[in-house]
Image (cartoon, rainbow, N blue to C red; front, side, top):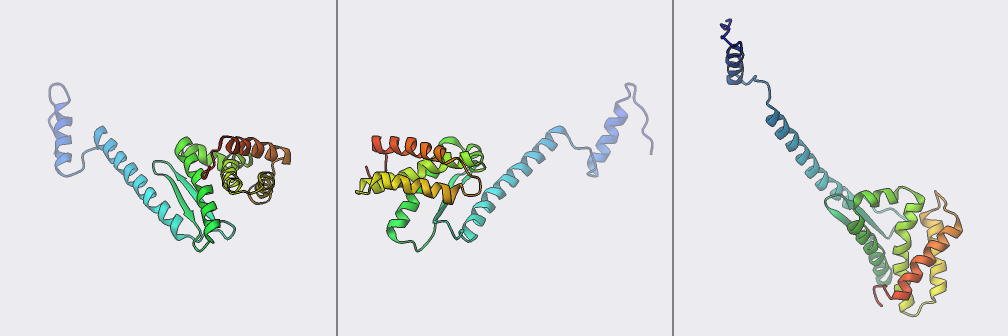
Length: 190
């Protein structure tokens, strides 16, 4: 069937679109496309927020880690500490991961991910976490200098082994960070 053209030339198109709409073949409207796109994005984001934490908790902990912090956009930090640690080691793991959780909340997931992806960024993340441990142990009577030296060694061998940072830079970062934390008493038990 051919539609009779209307005087302005648009009535035929409107009639044709109305027919297509009745059979479910009408072209989508801009608002319909936007709504569908927004729905897909929301469902995708919601699925991601459910799947990623689930996978995080279901996968085995790395053998060399006592704790891990995952920083997710829109969700914030998710901490996981190895089960079965001795109480003092478990406490230090929670203190360490607590610093990472605070970094995630303060600076956001994008900043956290950028820091974790580079050696100097990892130094920025790990120095305050290790210094929090040092502050607790020093507050309990541990030798502060020895504890800082031990934290520097841990940074170099455990956190920066694959992407070395000059030793002087690691020492300077630790002294700057730990010195400030210890001098002001910002350690958790001080």
